[in-house]
Amino acid sequence: MRKLTHKQVRQKWLNITEQSMAMNERNDCSVKAVALATGVTYRASLDAHIDNGRRHRQGTPLTVTMRALKDLGFWPNELPEDERPKTIRSCQAELRTSNRYLVLVYNHFVAQVSGLVMCHTKNRLHRVKRIWRIAPMTSPQQKHDHQFQQMLRERIRRINDPLDPLKG
Image (cartoon, rainbow, N blue to C red; front, side, top):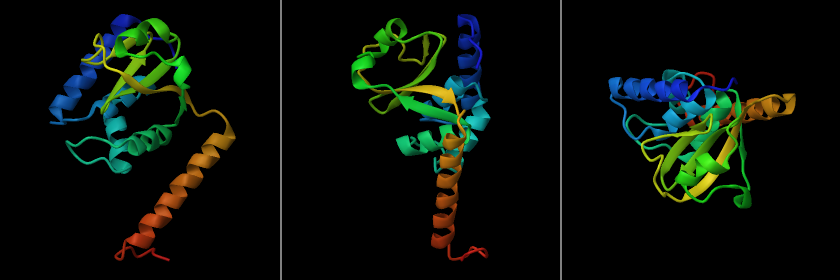
């Protein structure tokens, strides 16, 4: 993933917000944050979230967001508690600008790209709950583990669907 300038990140945030409004989406902060952190389009991020269980105009559970990230080919590496900033405002100063991050505050996701926190809450003192460094899946083991998890989810879905002709 290449490093973006501040102007490019800001423009991408505005484009994603416009696309969200055009689709009449609400409560989609995780979709926007994943799109920004990974560099994929808003539509691709939304489709990955929907495929993993997100409902239209409703909030997204953390497990759905993590599965969507992996489906898009990215691996979330959680930062230990002693390495992460305490508030959204301090994220820009304390996190490395060369990396991309997903930041979880109370019921809200924020993306940090090129050292910029991209969200309407960027200068607020919201308490940070968790932070993940986002990196593309590189090792064959990561890809294999994710494909195995997808296969298991598909089998469980088939078992639970009485109308599926492939049940078995």
